Length: 281
Image (cartoon, rainbow, N blue to C red; front, side, top):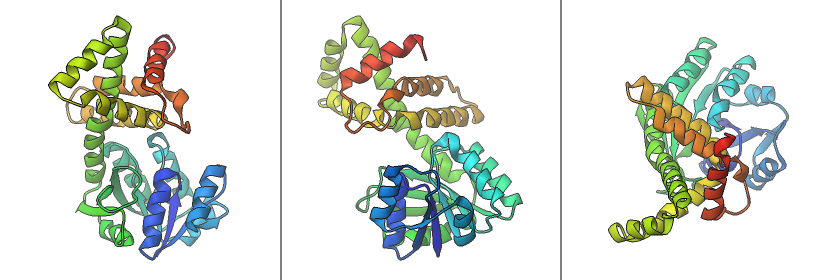
């Protein structure tokens, strides 16, 4: 099977590598992509095609791996190219968003698979999972049988894979945003040291673990803003309040300066940025 990756960023490249490892022919569209993306694709030996149209004309399966806010637009671009294969949207979007995408593409004769990725870009088995739902989910799963990406089909219902991903991220990334806000407030009041000491009394090592997670996600905060909004929309559509995750989106928006920095920023720098941005975000 010929697979197209849209696009080989850090996660997209890892998914492409897993497909290559499973014997698939993997392609990507070089048009408009960054030098870093080009370097990643070349290092994996991916087949470069000059345009999205050529990718759609060549591939049997397209896998969309992009920031949540770009998922619908990318799907519409693929539809405009008259693609007629399987389109797997594995982005961090709400069930409502992926259902909207599926409705548009299916009317154009495109088979849609819903996907949700849990974990960091996979290097070894047992670290990252791709959950799938939709009638052609098993076909997509078979493209990764050699790993290291773990795959599992949930059902033939579009929206289930995204729903699982959204609920998982609500805890992991939502908790990091919550801790960031708490520490920024405590720092402002001069009680951060006392708070962190109390955290560690009740739960030894809690402060270091919290700091580590906050620092880890800062580089990707520009992506998480949209993801928090998708989580907020998911809760609202299920009759639950959305406001906490709207606030989490703002916490990540305030960290946009750290986008793709080479090293994880210090916790002090993150807290200062979150506090300094309060009058401008």
